[in-house]
Amino acid sequence: MRNPGRRAALVAGAWALAAPALVSPAFASPAPGATRRAPLPLIILDPGHGGRDPGAIGTGGTQEKRVALAVALELRRRLEAGGRCRVALTRTSDAFVPLLRRVEFAREREAALLLSIHADAVPREHAAQARGASVYTLAEEASDPLAAGLARRENLADRAGGLRLPSVSPEVQRILLSLMRQETRAGSERAARLAVSALERDVRLLPHPHRRAGFVVLKAPDVPAALIECGFLSHPEDEAALRRPEHRALIAARLSRAVHAFLGPRDARAEA
Ligand SMILES: [Zn+2]
Image (cartoon, rainbow, N blue to C red; front, side, top):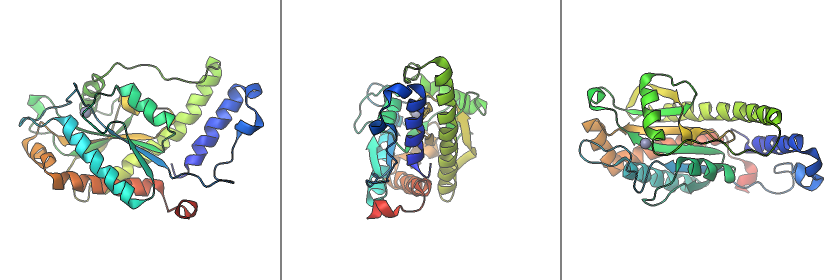
């Protein structure tokens, strides 16, 4: 989303629509950036799994949770060095964080983008074929059986649950969700396209690298989100690459480029 203020305005409008009597002018619509300098957009990095949930385990014993955290920390370092956004991680240590807590973490902070970082594995019978990085966005219907299987395995890390919305009538909820989701989906798709085009220059990708499936961690209706699978730990060469700090740094560098492209041209206000 080029202008995160648009979402803030949409949400403020949604609240006004939901409960006009409760929204005083003071809270109704602080025109984003009109009088105060807007803070830098916030990017949430979400290293998958952690703690008692190791995620996928490679044939050589590499744990997905460690690869994901290492890539996320390196990406945070690069984004912070760029000075164009704020960065927060859903976990910075080997801790278990439920999937819905990750979604809430991004929503509470009105994040401009959530990138969930993973490195998955497929069952042994497919292990020789599946390799390369891929990027996922949310869809009710998975784009292909591989995507469906990955989402099923990722979602096992947690129980799926409902979204928390303002207490308004079901009809108003439906309208709000639909407006927010349209905007959010467009942002997610754009982020995924940028991630694929940034990665494809020097990182091996899975064929048809932009896929869609029902990942719980991508389900915030108001935060654009994409899930990056950095490679397959079930493939010995991918696993060996993901163990190398240089390869993880390369992935982080390409993703940092994608995030900067997502943010759009430098904001003069943010630079001042
Ligand atoms: Zn995972």
